[in-house]
Image 1 (cartoon, rainbow, N blue to C red):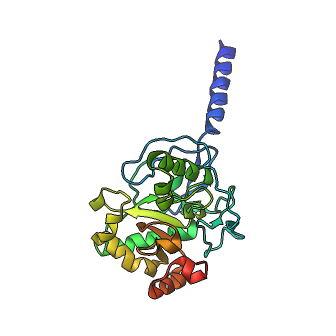
Image 2: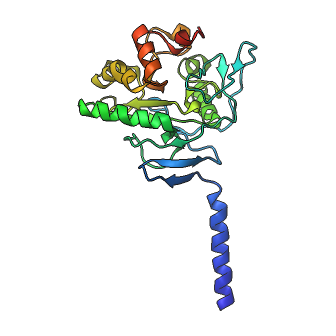
Length: 262
């Protein structure tokens, strides 16, 4: 009887170890952030615009053959530019990914909660500053792995066609979300959706006029799609540091224009 109990206990431990390898590894830090990010599988996708919340195939989106597309030399640089002409390495994962202590529009563990540690600190300050002025924002989607971006991109292509997808969604390797420097934000007034109408709300106006004070820019501003390659996204903020953000805001230019990547 004793041997049977020991054998049963061994089986339970073995099964638990095997299951653990299929999920994310999370560890709670003392500063109220979640850190020690590690991903061993492609997560369930649920960070779409509006009602697009279906799970899609995990096949990688095929990259178009374009000799003008270059791979960035330093994907960890604060001024890194990822766009349709500049790709991140497929295996790049930022160091020091943490979950910022801000409200999210969803519950549960997910890689899109994460951003780089410097971005998390600035995001916490931005949310606190907004709250002090009666502006309540929520975080929607931060870091995305190359694999996750492929799933999202395929979803938009399959749902709306490639021409539409290319206006709002980046091919894998070309998304700023992979840098860990970006976060999509929204508010209750637009039911926590990522829609252009957010830019016309009190929350969206505040974000546009104040994000630079905390080191963020509106990465895809209105009327600049011919430069950024993407349609207006008032919800997508990118951390570049306070000095650069204030200069970009003051000059009313895009990151590409500021850094000479037009």
